[in-house]
Every structure is written in C-alpha cells, then in structure tokens.
Length: 156
Length: 179
Image (cartoon, rainbow over all chains, first blue to last red; front, side):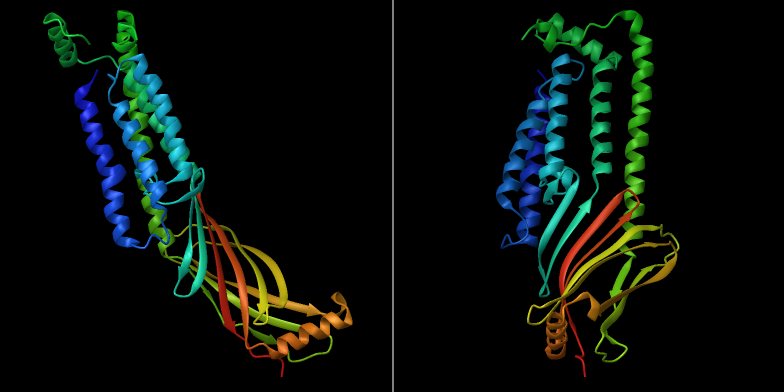
C-alpha cells in the first residue's frame, strides 16, 4: 500500500473536488441559478473518493493499472456530467459538451460548447500515463528503498 | 489479493532496456500531447475572444405591396484580427414572431466566414402571396401592420478549430410596421 500518495490524493481531492468549487461558485452564483450544487457535491465527492483510492496502490502494480482503467471510466463520466476539476466545474449535457443557460440582462439564452476532441485527447493521454507507470522500470532509489523495507520485514 | 497483484510486476530482466525505451517514448508522447493541448487551447481562446457578431436593425424593404411583404437586415461577423482562422459553417437559424405571437417566418442561413475579414450575412424574409391562402396573407399583413416589435428566436452556431459553439437566444427588435 502507498499511504503517502493516498493521503496526498485525499488532500488534493478535497481541495479541488469540494473546497475550491464551493468557494468559487458560492461567490459567483450565490443563489444557485446557473449551477447545480447537488451535482457539484456528488461529482466532487466521487472525485475525492476515487482519486484517493487510486493513490493507494503502488505505480508499477497490475492492480493500480486496473484501477487506472476504472479511473479513466470515471473521467469519461465527469466529461459527460461536468462539475469537476476536469470540466472546470461547469455543467455538461453530453460527452465533451458544455451547456449553460439562463437569463442575462433580460435576454433568455443558452450556450453549448462542444469540445469532445479535447476530452478524447485528455482521456487518451491519461491512459498513456497509466500505461507508462506500469511498464517503467523502477529507478535505483526505489529499488534500494524496497530492498531496505524487505530487509526489515515490512510488506510491500 | 495476492502479494504478486499488490507488488510490482515481475518483468523479465532482459526487457529492462526495452521498457526503459518505451517509457521514454510514452513520456515524450505525454509531453507533446499536453503541450499541444495547452498551446492550442490558449490560441483558440484568444482567437475566439476577438470574434464579434452584431445584428443591424431590421426593417421592411421595398414599400408596401399587395403581392409581397419583405423584411430585411444583416448580421456583421467580425473575424478580421490577424491571428484569426476560418469560421466554418456559421449558421443562423431563426423564427420571427410579431408581438402578438404570430409566426412570420423561419429560415436557416449557413455561410463560411474567411479569416481576417468582416463578413455581412444578409437576412431577408420574403412573404409571397402565392405561398399563402388569401386569408392567411391578409392575417399576416394585418399582424405586421399592428406590431411594434419583432421577436426573434435565434440560434447561432459555428465551428472554430476543433470546437463548436451554439448559442440560442430570444431577442426583440423594433419594427416599423407597414405604412
């Protein structure tokens, strides 16, 4: 188990999944007219849970690779429903489709921004990164640390 | 969970150099991919922020006729900054109503907007007597005669680079009725 990364991911997940969007969007849209706070909290909590869990596994393990594949599945979900750091916390109505609506200076409007090419590139790069973590040979420092831990009888 | 699943994978020692090489190639792909994304998105963001779309006043054209009613106006699309790129499939899809909610017309216009140019998109609504029954045409003329404004349900969409933007809005414009 990789407790240090686990704790680091909890902090990052709580900060960018819940605290930052809460502070920013409570300030921008205090009455909740444009943003759906329930979805923001739900997706933020999901991001926190999954990202923290993902950090629990050592990089060069098969289990981490499988978890990485599941994590990519959730990124695809986030690009579909929005409200996370991956989508700048904005609402979505489809994969890579940002949708905003409301009334501005008395004019009713709705805006769609279609950027699914970018979403596909980000998801693919995340996949490449997870694959790289699996096949990359551990460097000398990691080897020495692992050998030392095995020597004192600690489990990997 | 077995120790083998949780622990590092046991690759053969002979594959060490190949894995090292592959991980460097993948790292270069990652650096290149993320660099492309950041630079391209910054460029498109700046280029898009310079685009302006302005509607001009719409008015009845050509005076009153018992045979036709014509309303015209235009949109000016300003894409003339030096680092602009072509706007593809610039589409204006609209429905026009009088202030009594009588539908006057609906139309879709698509045009390509070249880079570094200002482009005028003409909107012309022609109501021809031949396309309606006599009563329908009289009702339309009457509704236009009485209305003080036109209500536009408009959808503007365009493609810019890898992105597509769609804006829907309900607008109101002053209208000089048929004299």
